[in-house]
Image 1: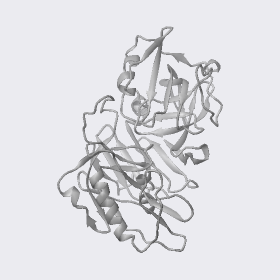
Image 2: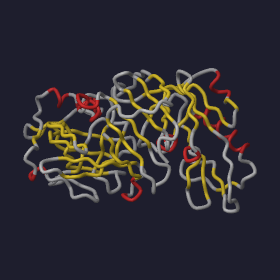
Image 3: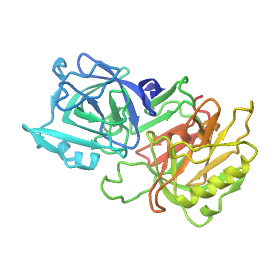
Image 4: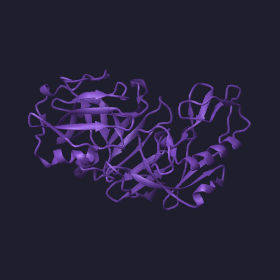
Length: 359
């Protein structure tokens, strides 16, 4: 089942959005899709504490004939602890979820069941969060779709139909359209698969995240020496814009990139990006090819839109950044995933990459 993927830029978000239907009659909602979390939630009336401004009408459960709250006793309520990293609450015998993200954005509300519509496919009794207190960097979207692998994620809840299998392609620019495909449909032959890694992290259960191993990074045909001695575990995340590397690995990549870009004038850094260039005097620019090598010797050449990020019409920056500590888990972000066919065989335990998935 294919869903169009759009940049969230028009809704004030740096993430990517898809539309799903919720309720009876169906209400269409524009939600950020997130491979780094599990719980799907949307803002709900009456917004007991706080709702931010969104483009779609806020979902009103009183107008749906298929909505119901989840009580505090079922197993699904207790499963919120591992799905969100926070113990559920209980108010008037209704289960309360609490979801907080790495940027301190959060959603709190009623844990509920509703009729979910994905294009023409309908799923009854879909567990989701009916947000009553929501604040953070969600732009004007209506909430989040959790694509993690916890039992409460949309991937697990729709497994009887789609088989815990999905793929997507993130477009290179805000004017292009990508896709999110639920189920194994028309997979191209040039996709190469790396196994998911295991990692015991504190707090949220590791079964939720998609861990992979970066074995090497090659830039301009030169393999970076830091990776000859070790690998490091990485989360692939559709809602983290910039890939994060261990500080030592990042500094070597950055220095090599600067050598290969030495003919272009530098520009001031931007936010966490410290390697930027002023390209106002250039019609054509040659970027060094960057190849990420994952476990199983899966080599992925990044598109130009995955190497630098455009800050303005004439200013670009290297689209990588360093973690605070060498021991921090890395993140393979959305910028580096652009134009790739990214395939999640959740049941089989593999992540696939294929070139030229979209523009």
